[in-house]
Image 1 (cartoon, rainbow, N blue to C red):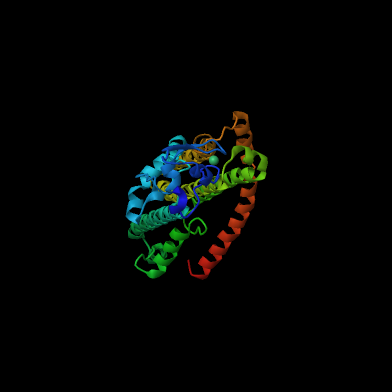
Image 2: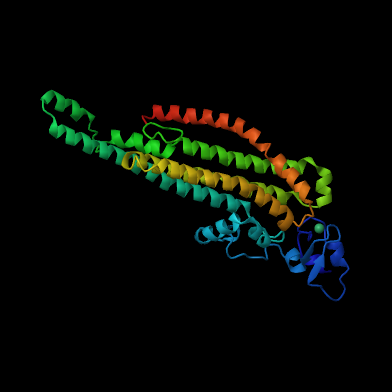
Length: 339
Ligand SMILES: [Zn+2]
């Protein structure tokens, strides 16, 4: 018996149908290609009998070490950005690791957070240095001693921990804490839109759950849908970290090039990214259904689900108010910690 070597019953990658019966009909020859009698998916038997056989050299979920993960970051992002291409390669037979994917997103956010904190810190410190230089000039021109003492008070001593601690705290906790940087809206807006994208994606998943008849007709394992939700749900949060860089750049622009309209240009870039993210979420799901999972959905059904998925934005309002409270709590703790 061919299946005696395999611990887990071989199943169809798409619908999960047990293929043991099919294998039992093999007599003296093993075919290379097969077709699921349940859903009609065509596959090669090697991929069904040996899970994780497919090894994509660019895919972070197939990375074995953190170093490999780093090397595969740009290629994976590139593939993700164009969902058609992604779903042509990441087929249902491909082994997946959502643990690695989640780790990858968390590490990227962490790195971006550290670097954007440094950028915000540099922006605040740069502002202090330029205002100190301005007051020093003024001080030298001061006529009376009384006036000079007053100006001396305005010059900030940057050698003290009392100076660095609050601004480091602010840079790390921006936009929840906004003491000197007044350009936090962009990060807040980007964070809110990332959440809207995640909610839209969760709504796609819910819509799949809500219609068991449709699901039965599609003959699709729910694990595929759940994975797609995680992949789409986490990626937009990178925009929030990018918006922290934008906040630093706008702040710097305000005091070094106040006439250059830096804010308008950067806001436009972030806005385009947000719009792109909304298009991307829908594109990713539609190509998952059509290309990745080979579901023969009709175009008007797709339009219906796409439209319905925007209902997810309703829950964004709720999440946003929860986050506002978290932001206030962080702010209160920061005040307590002397930031
Ligand atoms: Zn099947």
